Length: 242
Image (cartoon, rainbow, N blue to C red; front, side, top):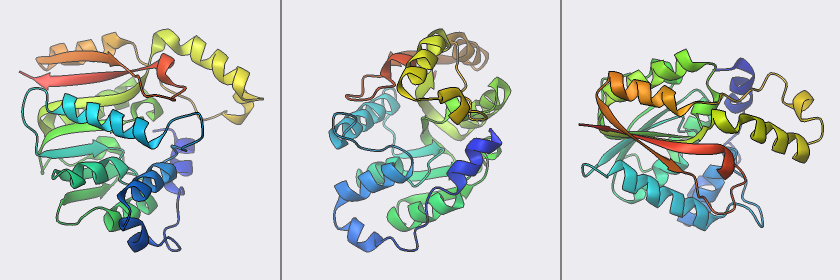
């Protein structure tokens, strides 16, 4: 993981002055707050609560495609917004993130009866002692330092998950130049502002090769989150154990 990105996310939030009990009385407001402190700002004309919920429903559908899943684990769970939604639907949940501040919030926000583990560490170091029916990541793989690190994380996910794995928001190598052109157009001095904060773009062949080595079925599907400017530059990946 790039150290510069790590510095940003490790200091994302201070929960000392947040009234979590008040947020718990309104699941919608709780979820939106959790997404916001993870870096997903909800803005007029952009991504909305309904957009997030529709994305979550599709994720759950993909994770349950081959087998009925009752437990899910998230790589890069941050403040736990995704785990929160799964827990409300009765799933047992767990996650790993390198930001202790965000994990502290997740620990207070998600029903403790539903949480199996919350691990503070780099994704590649995730323990496989506790296994889950399914695993996923959301907007995480593009922040990894290189393909070797990404492959190491996937190896752990394959070992930790019994049936299925879904990766959301994988940046498409074929769309890299279009992405950069768009960002440079929208953000003044983009290259200067994002110096040392690179994105990792993936060819689909990277995931095809991993699937072949592990005898997995692999499926790609487009991102269609309403209001999400990133849709044209990303794709999603599903792995299913045979």
